[in-house]
Every structure is written in structure tokens, then in C-alpha cells.
Length: 151
DNA sequence: GCCAACGTTGGC
DNA sequence: GCCAACGTTGGC
Image (tube, rainbow, N blue to C red):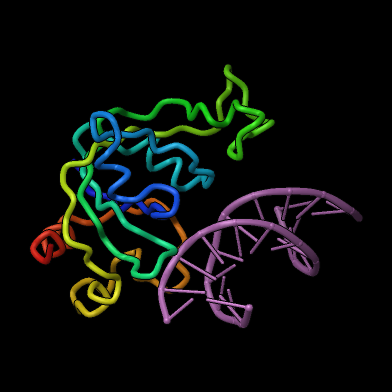
């Protein structure tokens, strides 16, 4: 059982969109970064939990807790020539991109990035590192516990 | 396989 | 809108 942090831009898909989704679940499609893909494809297991993080918005921060409800499978958006996630180099036989499905466990208060930064014990978190851009990052158990205590 | 140019991310 | 960081692309 591992812990993760998954970023989403609320203008694309917010915590409230998540709560309104059928079954409160969604495919985490559209990831086009190899490291993030590998986390999903190779390491995420059923029942793993993740912080749902709002990025690129007025108040970035953690907005909820989600869990992996379906292990990695080919990201269908890579095959759609009309879509913005189309990848001409991907084929059904050799898909390049994968995604897991996630289910909303609960919406939490919005825990702002500034508040995470204010916690000295969280200084090592990947999301807080300078230049961090990865949309999916592992969270270690101690950090997970500390943060859930703040929610 | 190197590396410069380019594009994207994302906080501020 | 700015800009630092960094992943990707493509010529060589």
C-alpha cells in the first residue's frame, strides 16, 4: 500500500467535478510524462491512496483524498486523432500511455500549498521541491500521516 | 549519444 | 504575465 499525490487543474477537473462524477470515479487520462506514467503503470496498486491536488489556480493545495480503484490500462485518449491527447506514435498493439482509475474517498478542506510549506517536517516532500513539475509523485507514509492530521 | 533550442509547467 | 526549471526534440 503506497501513497501518492496527483495534480489536477481545477479548471479542467476540480474536486467538485470529481464529487459529481458517476460513481465518484474517473480515469486519470492525459498524462504524457514518462515518469508519471511509470508510477501509474508499474507501481500503483488497487487501494493505494492519493492526495488530490489543485494546481495552476488561485490557491493551489490539497483538496481531497482519492484511491486507486482500477490498475493501469491503456489511455484511450492517445488513439483519438481529434483529441488533444492524441499520440500518432501509439498503436493499439503498442500503446504508449497508460492510466489508472481513481475514486473519490472524501473531499477535504482546501489545505493550501503555503500551509504545506510552513511545516518543517514536510520540507523533503517532492511537491515542495524547487522546480517540481511532476503531476504524480509518491508521498511517504510519515508525510501522509502528518498531512491527513492537518486536513 | 551529445546538446542547444524549444515548449510546458506552475507558483507567484 | 513573468520566469525558473526541466522534459523533449532533432540535427549532427
